[in-house]
Length: 287
Ligand code: PAF
Image (cartoon, rainbow, N blue to C red):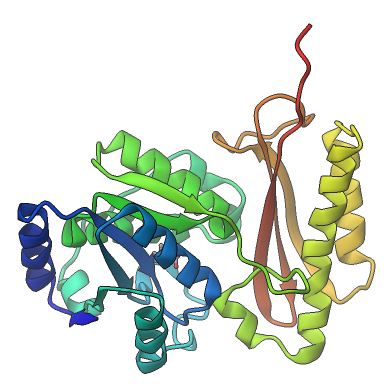
């Protein structure tokens, strides 16, 4: 595995790879890697000749009172994991180069980012779209892999790629869960053993929702009540939102028949904000 941190060096390497006819796959991350990230790497390897993974804790996507300073950073561990999963190039740009002095240019998606996570974290998605657009210009990938765990992020990046004509194929990888159902996240390491147990209410509520849909339930209000009740009944989890929205436009839905529905939720366990989601597809029989 090769290590690159200079932006120009990364661009030149990508130019050479492209000139040699190689298909470049890209997995952007903030490090603190877990099996979910390694799934993204493996997917990229299936679709591309060379896979670049970036590790960059992007300051602009954290709000003033969020966990930027304590976000887990262990590049030696990340490098070993990335290499074990077949990463070809580990790209670790410096914040000073990514955001040069007097930096004043942003990439802003103005619709999908205003809801769900965007309500609680008003500047988050501007930071995400800006850094992902920059990383795309640095790595020049043919294809990029994101996780379904951050469903709204995936929808926003998809919109950005379309709107700004990035010639990049997006691949969205399914959520990787622990054996007990907890969605893998770098922030799970903030949880105590008790908190981790309490956090299982999130995935449990999603399984109940899937059962409701599989049994023919359609009404979004009833579905929301089932999910909210499961999450809040222990009293240990503070619910932020349960959203039942169109999976592509993120517009609220009253019932779950028709185009795929994203059931997304956010909650606080101890001091940690967790998100999880599932896509509900109800088969409609045409007469
Ligand atoms: O999903 C993440 O880890 C980050 O939001 C991303 C896409 C690497 C941008 O910093």
